[in-house]
Image 1: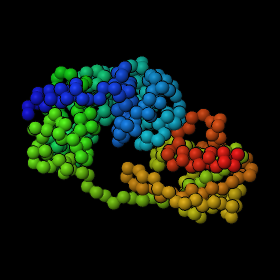
Image 2: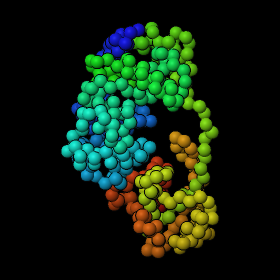
Image 3: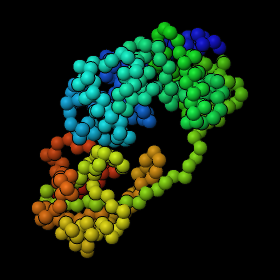
Image 4: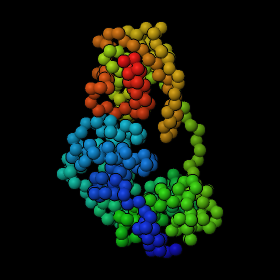
Amino acid sequence: MSEACFSDALLHWFDQYGRKDLPWQQNRTAYRVWVSEIMLQQTQVSSVIPYYNRFMERFSDIELLAAASADEVLHYWAGLGYYARARNLHKAAIQVVEEWGGCFSESFEEILSLPGIGRSTAAAISSIAFKKRQPILDGNVKRVLARYHALEGWSGERRISDKLWQLSDKQTPNERVDDYTQAIMDLGATVCRRSKPLCDHCPLERCCQAKQHGLTNQLPTPRPKKKIVEREKIMLVLESSEGLFVEKRVSSGIWGGLWAFPLVDDAEVAVEWFESQGVAKTSLAWLPKRTHLFTHFKLNYQPVRGYLKNPSDCVMEAHRGVWYKTATEPAYGFPAPVKRLIKEYEDNNEQNG
């Protein structure tokens, strides 16, 4: 199948079967496309939609996003994970407002220069929002191209990545590039899926090399397996009449920039911390261990609860800590494990009401 036939078949399929009612496909602007592309990195469409709608309801334009505090942006992002995306989104919004007057540049190079925007994301914004011909290479596109061309090798290798970029450029048409970009991503997401691809519904099936050679289940070549690193932490849940003690984490490391309960490495340090706040060791409640999966490691953590009778005795950890009262608080960005513990705290208070 020639390059023109490839794109024609894909566009014909998209016209008939492609998704056209996703939130970011409505009222299409560079800002809305950009936010969606950042959210969709490492995250499925079905998971992104409610977050995207809520985010856009609060930050309907880039000026509102730039004017917001980092804490509020993280609050609206909390639950999506990969929080560096939200921090970079906020930084980029400020840069667009301050340097470009609040209007996205149509220059691919300038879009690429923004924090958190890589080559494929910049290309998606350029092609979808501005109809500029730019090849893209997100996870869905890699899968389509690797199967169609029967390209073996992990895409994280420079040699394979370069080849995929060449193939993406080769297949990208000069016309209807905005629809083509959405079409090839959509095909990868809905038809050329990771497992159990729907080859019978694929417009490229007839010339797909993976299909012809029985390699559909082997391609794309998976990332070489690495042993999952496990980390052990103890989560310090300090309660008082003022609420729950939470602190803002540093921008790097686990849950960078979010608000969370303090984390320590072992039980002895945990006991010392509570005693330094005036909570006796004998009054601590050690909850069952829990697990939270990150991309590159597994976090095993054990929550420990203690109650402080006199909140004014609490040392606010170099002014990074606050008492969180759920009923009256402004927006805080909490990671999922912390949100679950807060919910348990609220439910317990209601039961003991």
